[in-house]
Length: 274
Image (cartoon, rainbow, N blue to C red; front, top):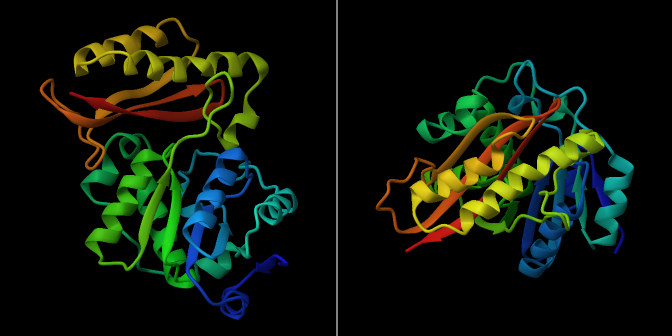
């Protein structure tokens, strides 16, 4: 099956075929983590659509929109290798007409944890995801657990707005040394990359403990002395992203974000407290 590259709405309409459709939204610079999303999409549907769009709405004025890696030809090769049917690669002008006025508000949940550090970020994420849902019309959409708050907010949007779409999450893919795969890892110098391992070590240390206070303490201990600027380390409810109390039972997410050198990284681990 030949890969179809749709660069606008008209191309996307022409590319539609029969069968169940799975959408994998990405910003490109595809790595093994994205391939895992594509493979899950193939297991869930007969036709996979990957979107590649660096979304300006989710970047703040001091963030890395202009230097975010753009590797379209290599990305198309990866999609071909994974048996993707369609890649949708719109321009910003195609996605956002100049007189655009309406966008999605992410609410209270979009203003805490990652949203507190990056105001407006999740409004931009949900706006582009809703537009992609409307344009592609998938039966299922696949997202990575590494962006756990994003995944939770997308599930909430689907529920709150009664969207007829199934949302599937895929566990974080890691390097052999534990570093979570990210398109931004290519920014790291060798020294920064060694420093970045403190993030996954903190999560693994926290996962060995059994109560919220001990989890937080063990994770913070791993970050002590690391040459990084910590934005947050939180233990939160996976559905609301509010911090859990000491008596919490069931699933919780230990989430961390920090700047290593000039590169900001996020990571998380899903824990079960009993």
